[in-house]
Image 1 (cartoon, helix red, strand yellow):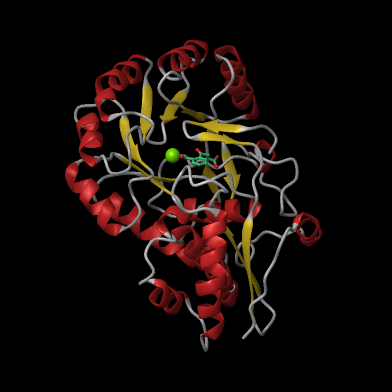
Image 2 (cartoon, helix red, strand yellow):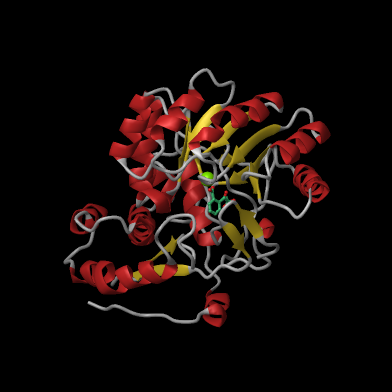
Length: 357
Ligand code: OSB
Ligand code: MG
């Protein structure tokens, strides 16, 4: 990574990518990226558990299917609990293939029409407050129009105040990744409203639906859920409880693009806007996210920044660059619409396994 990314749960300095490449007999290639990390800190899956599930269950299942489809894969893996990041790595690659089969982009295949998607930048915890203010300033110079600060107890009111003071008109969000005890509600409300934070993401543990609902009641900011929402049931219950006024959709967390789209539609019907979250993906996962963000129910700016903001060298030929109005371009070619740098992959590869029919 260009620089370490620190959140309430830890620091990431390097990422090891777990990729799935599906090759069809007629010569098409589909790519998916598993967004799990090496440590189970954001959620319980890791690259190791995902690799295990992919190699022992999901990929053998897939290659045994006569003519694999998204529906068949989803039916065949439905009874395996959890493992959503592992499942999504395959699902996204299948969507890439299905879109190529129809000669359209993943965006079109899923029902999208936007040519560019609005994005913001997620800023990790910095060593000092002046360093944070400088970091935010450089992102604003780059052209990002909304900033999400990672916060945690002890890194909240003061850094948020400093950023607000330096940039009075900035659209400012925060994300705590479950770091606060539910009793912290009052204090969060005070600094978030005082410094005009427009969205507070996942302040409490993933099961703390009532605490999120209490925070959302009468708040002058949106309460966004990320880790709490993993499927339709968790979304419906949280919506019924009034626990969210914004939904972060991550393909890996919910098990695929089609589920992600369904959840965003459901939230929209309840009057709750959605946006696409990120997991520090390579260009491959990033491309999937950009396509997802082009769908109609995604109305808030995504956590999708330019490739150079994360990695010195990306795995795709033409890295994503920030365009006018804080946007990324939706690739228009068939499927993912990006070219994978095979040579870079080959050099970086630590291990690989092939499953054949
Ligand atoms: O909670 O949104 C999160 C990165 C890793 C794990 C969890 C999260 C994040 C981010 C980064 O906020 C978003 C990005 O990829 O830019
Ligand atoms: Mg989050």
